[in-house]
Length: 260
Length: 273
Image (cartoon, rainbow over all chains, first blue to last red; front, side, top):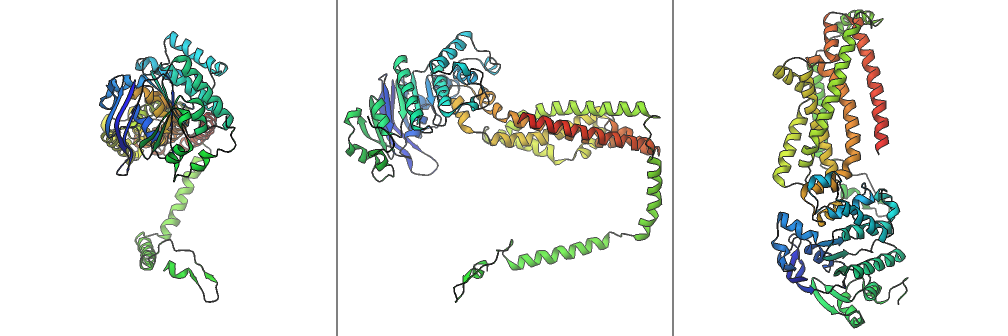
């Protein structure tokens, strides 16, 4: 159960990126967050696992306020939150297996982690996840030898390796070509369904959001301007979310992509 | 002034001149005049004396004739032990120095440390870099006495300054996204260093170590001249005895070893890229 209350965040002295955001989800379903660049989608996600620290407000994860945690407590809380990144953020020079196993680093003691002495059940689970995302043949391949789509699949496996209670995905398909992008979205959607996970996913592509999400949240200038089911999202809503932003036309008339 | 040069003439042609490196003409010509005057003054105080140069030539000839042919045999065992000691100094000090420069280099990287730690790390590296190995050698010979130990300490500090600084720079250039990803898993600070930072600087670190091995081999011969052990000591005493044959033998071997070391370290560095 995730509850965000009056979240405010600004970088430096500038205008706040989030201006009192309220949001909550307990559904073990996929929620897509849409909005133009700079609307605060990324900041919202990063505030949740404290990659950035919000100025004020509350982020309650199972009743615990993430903003009040420090040190070890914060690390333990982060273990429950898996994250998938736009640029995959795999450690390039480590093997695929090491990257997947690094999802357990919040659980294993420092020396065991440093020496790659992970418990056998972690290794088994990592192998299973790699098999599930179709990369078990690449166990010992260095991750910078993989293609973009393959890297993101490793990124998904790493996030799931944490056994998270919630999954965050920050534009997971934005760096991929349209076809690979669809495949990754399908993978994330299916895996989260199998694992029964609430997922918060920032999407650039409204068509994808409508297709995969059970709920869509629209952000504009740091506040929520839409919250509803995909079929409730009309062109008027899109205009509300994107008007005056360069992306409006792109979202209303997507090009090069088959609309379903 | 540079703006005045870029004007459109009445006939429509555009007048362009490359802007001066120093735009203020007073400063520009002032600096020029100052440098010329100072050079003339410095040259005048040097007392370069032609007759002194002429008198030096026969003495130089004497040294060179003594140096040919080089004498490898009469002090052969001294030369061998000297070189073995130099190589030991080099390998030990490079190993210890590189290992030490990892924590200090990390401390001196702004993107992964808090400000107080950063300043301490920076300060240590700056101090280590500020003294030339020969000066350090003199200090350590005074502190711990003649011999290889002084040489090892000297080169450890030298390595720490050089490799530490470059490690700090390498850490500051890493991709931050990889750190964020490992942090998001709930890993602690040192685990993040091991998993997200270390792999990214590893190739640089190996290359630097190879390079430093090469540098330390050269430096180990120099610091021997001030009494810090190794072949430099042997060379110094050969000169002291006017034994130019042995001295030139040492110099020739030195050149040979350094050529080999350079080739090997260059090959190794290319291999790790």
